[in-house]
Length: 215
Figure 1 (spheres, rainbow, N blue to C red):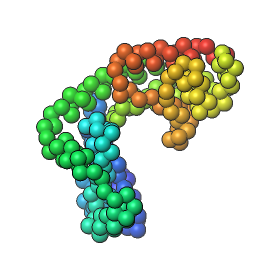
Figure 2: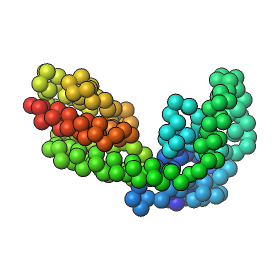
Figure 3: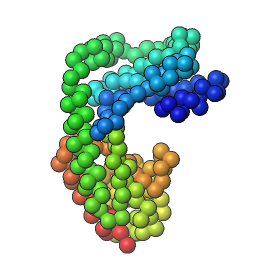
Figure 4: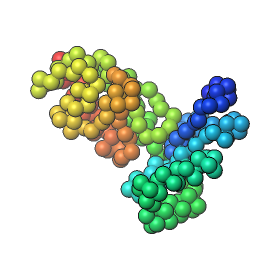
């Protein structure tokens, strides 16, 4: 972050938007920081974005918030006020309660997610032809499946891309995932481990069976 900040200091016309929504979902020895904290001289052109959907599991409330220079926030309010009106007041009150209430459960939740991460990464790396990096935050993994491309499923689908892979995995094994190409990461695919362990084990078992069936 210091190296990125050093570059940005040389280009004062560049504004920075930083997405900090996973700040509490970090693992191992990773330490969270945001760029306005790392380099205060950038603060006047940084927009810091966050929300309650991840750390507080309030996905259905759809509450986000941001902090930045006063003039920028005023302009954003002017535009949003004319396009989406305002977020409902109940959701606003719930978000305030989450942010101002006890925070001790956040570390417990991160520890639980870390345990699920370790489970999924371990199971995926046992599958021949799959390599899965261990992430230090959020609740997704991105297994690499280059060895699977060019092969054919038992139902005759040719897997030319990671998009073909995830579609066939869904249709033939009922495992939902997202193609890495959606994130500029081919040939990978994305799996969320924000569910219970038994579901994760079963999902990984189906992925292993699917890959073993390719010819």
